[in-house]
Image 1: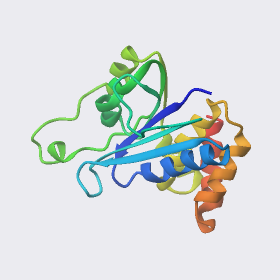
Image 2 (image 1 turned 90 degrees about the vertical axis):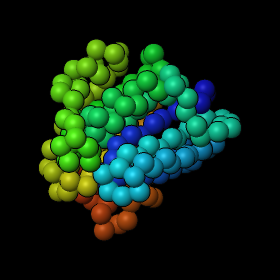
Image 3 (image 1 turned 45 degrees about the vertical axis):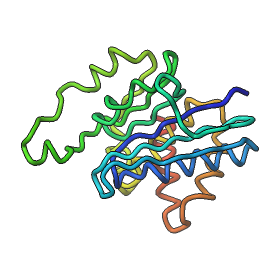
Amino acid sequence: MSNKAIMIVGVGGQGTLLASRIIGNVAINMGYDVKMSEVHGMAQRGGSVVTYVKYGEKVHSPIIEVKSADIILAFEELEAARWMKYLKQDGMMILNTQRIDPMPVITGATTYPENLPNKIEEKINQLISLDALSLAKKAGTIKAVNVVLIGVMAKNSDISKEQWIKALENTIPSKYLEMNLVAFDLGYNS
């Protein structure tokens, strides 16, 4: 198996780090070498957060270079646009069509770019866009956007659904597991 490189991009408070742990646990459970790295912008809720997850027979570095990500899991539109240059030509982006205004937009210094999903779609061959926030609400909590997106990624991967569920069970605290399993299924079946 060739190494897989996955970027998880979003803003602080969206659960990007938990998503990376779930993906890492799936790969570890399958016996792969796994490397992960986190990059934080502002060290607070709302700042840009990027996580790299690489797995395969032997991984030497977690860093993902421009045009080398197999998958970008984008939790927010602006972050998707910011990081899409890291996607391989034949890579896949899974995009949550949610807008979270960054500080310059909140203060009125600039405006949020319009029609980002359409602009992204013009440049990416394999794009799956969905309103993961609505599905998370349906599951019982807006905090499950990350697991909805993991469900979509799982459906489009060559890893069995059972492996993903096992990783969820091993990563998510038991008191939150049931609603996250619902969120996973909503993403998987979307």
